[in-house]
Image (tube, rainbow, N blue to C red; front, side, top):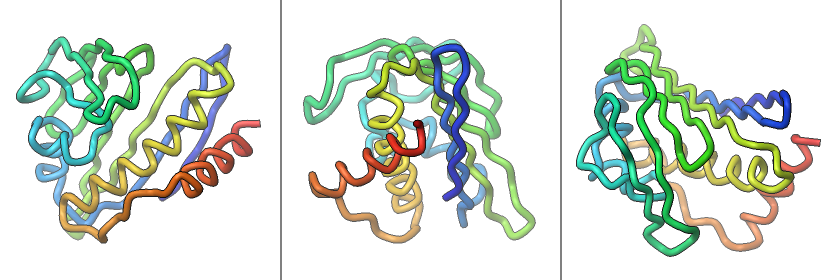
Length: 160
């Protein structure tokens, strides 16, 4: 997975680019249908399927954080989904490849409070791996506390 980071006016934009061996339509369903989202996304979205202008309510399934609100900002099936997740903006772009797979570019635009960009980036990296696993990619083991710290430290170093 390729990761790029941009800082601008108190915000951080982290982009993850991953080649997926799955067709755009299959990945799109995993991005927008609740039963599949619950397998890889960090919180429940509060609706059965994401649709244009959907209001979203996020609930962490293991009490990792507080409930929050969001909204679908852009919805262009099966290529583009942009939504707010708490006060961050998530953007998912799918581009088909010649071999029947696709490239997923997921970006996370968040306030640079010194904590969330690194913490959330490690989480999104893990979530994208879980998404790939859900669709038939390699299995991904849950991270230990020590592994989470190592990933968080890695992103903290990149964000300096």
